[in-house]
Amino acid sequence: MRALILGGTSDANLLADAAARAGLDAIYSYAGRTRAPISQSLPSRVGGFGGANGLAEYVRREGITHVVDATHPFAAEISSNAVAACEATGTPLIALERAPWAKAAGDNWIEVADITSAAAALPENRARVFLAIGRRHIAAFSIKPQHTYTLRFVDPPDGPLPFPDVDVIVSRGPFNLAGELEMMRARGIEWIVARNSGGTGARAKIDAARELGLRIVMLTRPELPERPRAESVAEVMQWLGHRACLGA
Ligand code: 3Y8
Ligand code: NAP
Image (tube, rainbow, N blue to C red; front, side, top):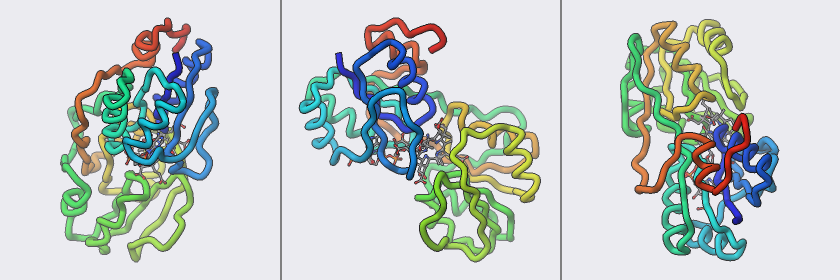
């Protein structure tokens, strides 16, 4: 058995620790989106495979017998590539997928399907907006330069930002409620743009927004091709044919 874990999330990190504790022959894969990804307890690789064909080639060349897609619900391309590559090579695939956050009483969400609709959902009159969606999709918001923007990146920005009034927080998370409340109060945040990532690492801003009565423009998840799914590390470990170690 030799497993490939497509990672880059806190859930993938938990799975990697359980696999290492169980002595599994597994390799952890990062896209290489950040300058210094946290080190893993498994052998790791960094960088794209070269599309679905490149991933299929990698599976064949490395003798991979199981693929776990533990990437992010918005990482639609790699997830589609994994389905195609596993079909082409006849390799078992499972996704470790966290349930989306459900709107609770007191939540004030505007749900949108894409980044353009998210920018359109912001008000015309000047507001203080926290874009909690990383660095790659912020250009869409330059249609509303009137706002005061707070951005949060994993690494410092590598160039000018498309807004006249903007500030960047450099932090990789996971985040906690006290820190999110303090940041939002200090900056007088009125609107938040977030993706429905699910899980716990990004959840604190959603709870902070409810407590402060802030509006959230919530990006809903992209459609992904059908594939077997699990919501826990233990389920994935059993699928890999190993009892998850205690505490996994
Ligand atoms: C490289 C691995 C851990 C894992 C930490 C989780 C928790 C913090 C919440 C906000 C939202 C956002 C972003 C976010 C969170 C965890 C987790 C999570 C959101 C790292 C990581 C990689 C990435 C890639 C990065 C993206 C960006 C997205 C920032 C490592 C830290 C916004 C997702 O600068 C960039 O180019 C960043 C790119 C993809 C989304 C984007 O499009 O900008 N994640 N995040 C992965 C790789 O190379 O394969 O560097 O160690 C993992 C984590 N990010 O416990 O240490 O839920 O997993 N990551 C989103 O929209 O939710 C931040 O700020 O509130
Ligand atoms: P994406 O749009 O689906 O992927 C774009 C391309 O990046 C893929 O086609 C693939 O390149 C490469 N890639 C993505 N994930 C990879 C991985 N784990 N290993 C090797 N190559 C990978 O994905 P994304 O939204 O850019 O996300 C990139 C990474 O960041 C993913 O690993 C994802 O898990 C992580 N992420 C984490 C969070 C979070 O909140 N934790 C949020 C977003 C993304 P090729 O086509 O060349 O193979």
